[in-house]
Image (cartoon, rainbow, N blue to C red; front, top):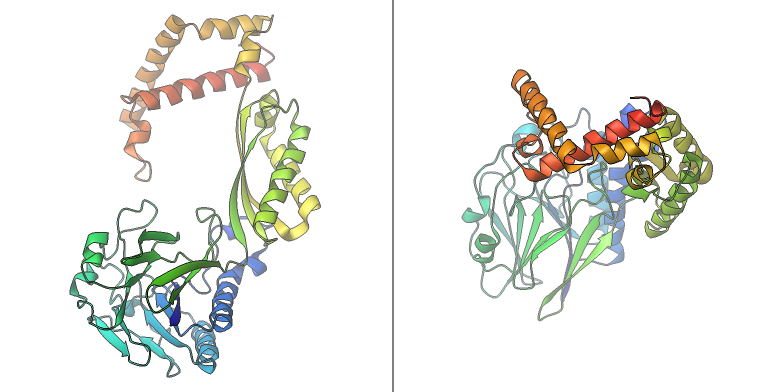
Length: 421
């Protein structure tokens, strides 16, 4: 029997994204988050008495401006060595060999193996019958499938492959060292320890296990929810896996339906309630929250007209309620005016809304809108960050979104002007 811990994408000492934009962000506490998450990994490895720690790339976020990070890494490796835990590391796209002048240059203790970046290497651990295969990145832009050069499984060993790779399709990550489940499975290994994709995923298992450990600490609002690592145990017959949480603060995206709120003040208790639930789910870790207010509500006009005021009010109320346990990254006001209630009201505005929603009038208005939009598109360059399908007005879903947004904008302006068009 033996156990190993699989982690990747630690990005040590990297800043959490967008904190510098906000004066009220708890920078000091959040800045140390990746390092404290790695402390948790080392503590977990010692507590669980694992035999091996596998780091599948991007231990570092890039080269260091000084030796503080490398010295910290060496201290953690020495802690693991004191518990007779061996460490196997490959480099990924962020800590590729040609990008590192200082990191990995300090001499590491004897328990650490840094795999070659020029060819696959195999380490045999005869005492536990394990063969570990790995190769790191020699440069950031690796476009070939490195796994194709890995050797086939060694007979009479438990074979573990370490790879930093885009296995399959992942929208939020650049493609590096692309591989496939079929190709990895063909090597005959028992476990593939993958890095690069920051979300924990099991692509195959148990024959073989192909696992992304995910990153141990979320670094932006795109990386919400629990983050951690994987401990795998070989019981003499099979490998069993278990995920462990290691993050020290957590990013969340909270959607609050305020349809039943008649005024903006009544929204705040709803936000507090959902944040309390999220804090409990996070084990009382500090939260960085993006709040999105949605729903058709009578408070829509007030929220839109005084968005800056209500943004500040909500932030202040959250600070009063939760102190520094919750920090608001952004508040998005995505509410809509209460169309049905307004349309059915006995008023001039209700009659106007009913009129513009008549199919023949709506269709004519939209054709004019479509024509104006086409003219506008022809005069401005397309933002390369914007997916073409999002502005393709030949698609029905795009047209429906435009109609709905235009109608809501008109209603909001009518409400704000007291019904005077």
